[in-house]
Length: 303
Image (cartoon, rainbow, N blue to C red):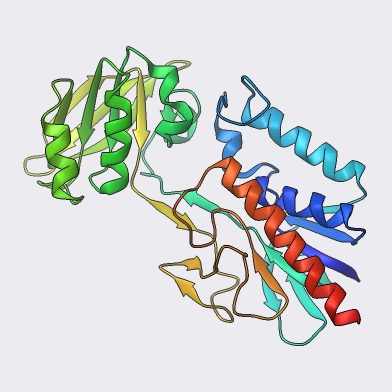
């Protein structure tokens, strides 16, 4: 039995494991896909303290190496269920069962995708999801933002400050975000809107060169050239395994700044929880907070 099981090996989960291990707790990290989470989609990260530039994969590798060096057990297993009642908690995976005294849920959130041809191919090579993370790579270039909500509008506002042109592509005949954000973008000479239109395909050879769009009203298609495309149609928290036993807020795990859930001994960290900013730095901060809280919980239970 481990002291703590961390579910998810993104920056939040790996940081949580690191802090728990340094507090002399035994830790098992469970990850269903690949280590690093969403940051592995970023070919270059320039806003992580201590690194002028680092790829998402490189940063993930460094975090994993650090956690392994501290003595973590790491398994590639998909969690199917959690039994969180009682002092001893059970995590059921596709490969077996594990017991622990405390759980840290760091399952993250995935960007919603369009599900059209070429999308998987160009993620990281022309398709991005975060203007704060990747906008600087398109300085002076032409980009498109797909989406019409507040997130898409905010992405476009950031990009308009550095890109030659920003084209917003929205499937509806109107933008769904706040009116003031729409008006602010409409006043910018380098921002344009294509409404009532969907993206049918991403095109290019080794790197993205543009998109094929289709007008909803009459199915007219058009090929548009862009240096980059930002998909901003929302996030989907991966919290299906916890929805039966802890409170969710619009799909995200309800928690405060201490990363506590409403289930005793269960903590949460990173993009899967309620929060206003989702960046690598805020994920690592959550990981540290959740781990220290979990360690305090275990220590108090032993007294």
